[in-house]
Length: 331
Length: 253
Image 1 (cartoon, helix red, strand yellow):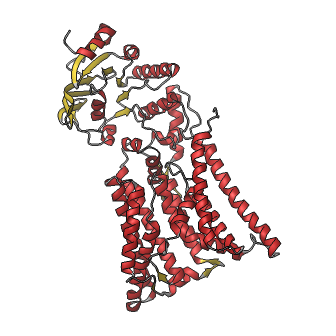
Image 2 (image 1 turned 120 degrees about the vertical axis):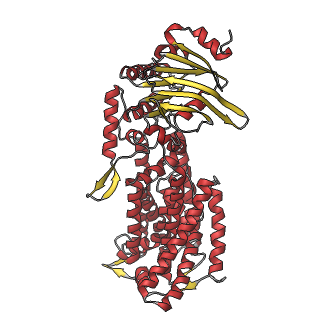
Image 3 (image 1 turned 90 degrees about the vertical axis):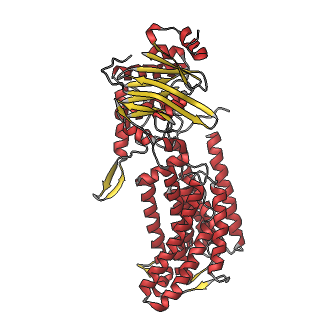
């Protein structure tokens, strides 16, 4: 079969175009449904849009870390339970620190605990993958189990650790300038990640490692150190997502991130990143997050049983990867 | 050969390297003079690639010495070799397909600028300018410098790999089988490119199986056989037959 080869730039545009078109189509269907069934607008309702953004924010932060990992040709399966572990650690710190000191330093300690736990788990992933040479799929699956076990131990066997903090409650449920505060947090994470990936050497090396690790090595890039950094970054994102979870629910929970692993990988893949490594962008992941959250929220609005969300996201991952494979073969 | 008063660009003496039970190199000597083109030939498994990797800092030699313009050097990393002016173009070219030409030229040595005077950021404009400049300088056509290498042909990729070496003012350019993966017209272009570099005074070590290429560009031919020196001939004073004989049987006739 002879098919004209196309430039990667054209492919990138097609990939982006389809995901934007898909997002537009999802919103349009919801708008039509809403006009017909409820006789009111869906898209032009600030409530609906904010609900989608709030729904997207925590998995998006995990997906941002996952974007770096997937572009580098790896995958981080531990991110959901590392987030759960970090949320429990932060909640425990907040419980004790909250009684000893004012709200702000207590919150600071809890936030540091969450990020440190996430970073540590990520750094261990990086060591397992980069230095020990264990395939990322297996190495991070091991961390998935370890983080889950440690999280339940830290939680004293329970499924939640309640911890309240007034500042944190404002972050999780407050409104600033008419916008939910946690949306600002997600936006900051996205902007910083965009800068890291697009404008720093580190970002350039993430692509080089994913596309051709041998070439990166011979160009004098310390690929081991950079891979360790990539997984650490994913862990830090899990820690940040944990803080946001704690803020929203005033509790840490070992299983907090369990359903979010699937969501976060779907967001990255639907955003145009290739599971073969070497391609993907933060903007793509952002669009992917909006698509997943729109579909999830839409299913709630049209009153479908929530379990359909998992099925929908699962199907989306498979279809997105099929498209990615077909791109390599036929276009 | 070099006159005794002139320091060769690179001089290897007694280089040995063992991989487990395999003695890949045993006391190998090699000189490349300034502005000289030396061909390194030998059968498969003769140790050519291992020798190249020692010169480019990928492997460390078990024994032996390396001198760059008379200065003893040990390269612990590929970066150290490149800092000393040795650029290596590997058979697989070591390019990243998802990055642009300019980004490949600067891979591992990216130039930085500052956004709004303080925020460090990659200077992509400079990388792309270098891609255009090198292309013009080498008289090669490269497609849009803003496009990733993607589906470029083998010859174009070879040109990009050579551009990268030239951009960094290579004093010694090592080329591992530069024409092996190319179609005939592209082979001719790469050979023309090597002649052009030679005319500009770059020292070149070319590893090749292709005797036609070797005789077309080389001043001197160094033969390896099972990890040992098996001949060092002036190209204009030897023949295809003699070189092949040395590759197969060494000094014995």
